[in-house]
Length: 405
Image 1: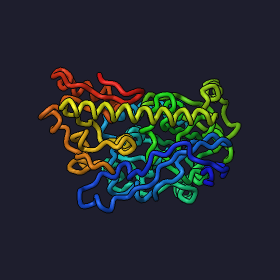
Image 2: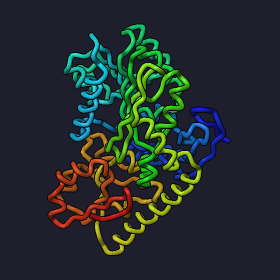
Image 3: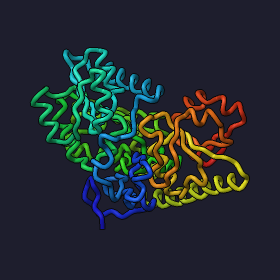
């Protein structure tokens, strides 16, 4: 029997997605033979409500000098993070000489705003290649993994922080108690924690199981986040739902008793009970929904192939790794995936080995259908690629259900 990473209760998987490769592990043909796989299973803890992977690869395998995700490549996300930073600055940084710490700061897409405002900041990014991009912009960044020991070091060298921020990072961290213990020491008594991650409620409702991959150790709910932070003398004081990444939740957390708890936070926890997020039956139904979605998606591609149609993919995302491997879809059904990230181009998708090509390849000879793996950027992408649609091209989406537009 496996133990919950948060409360040490016994847990067992409610679904297996089979053997999965490293989601961002785009690779060349000489690496195919020795490609790493792990058994990806997901469990729900009935005690603390946390949904979590049973097994995760070593963090160095996922976050390293070859990490293939750069936040700054999306204009929509750049604007989103600017608004995120403005909200933190306006609401919480009203003292003299504030200090902001961000973990998983990537290429500095969020911290560059604080830099421009002359606010003291520190980014912590374990992937050296993306950290280098931030450093070249003059953003204070260290290449490391955040934990309690590093928090103590930061406080000794810089003093306590007024704000600790993160975006699409906290759910990556299996050693979560060390993270929260570090945060509680890092931020001032009146300090604030603001982070956002894909929201469990959206994943369940939209059957967006592609949010589950090696980097996403956890799928958070307000209830599960409140549980672990309370263990370290902190509490959720506010929540703000976001449309990013197919549905995310922004959590605002402070030291216990230092700030009022918003009615939105209280209402969201109540809503989670009515949605059944703490009910084991919900996850049995979710498994059945995943199995149905998988079959519908593959059957559609097989049918298009039988008609002699050409299908490509758009956006070599981490999420696509789960979809392709769980649904057993390879280059026989999807000819290639186009992507604008240079480090991915000329390589192959993890596990299924579909070629990754530049966007120009797609534009130079349009396929008849394209699977939009980067569906969370659908508006931005479809506007950019309206010529494809004008030429009769069709988009295939699989969230919230399998459909063609």
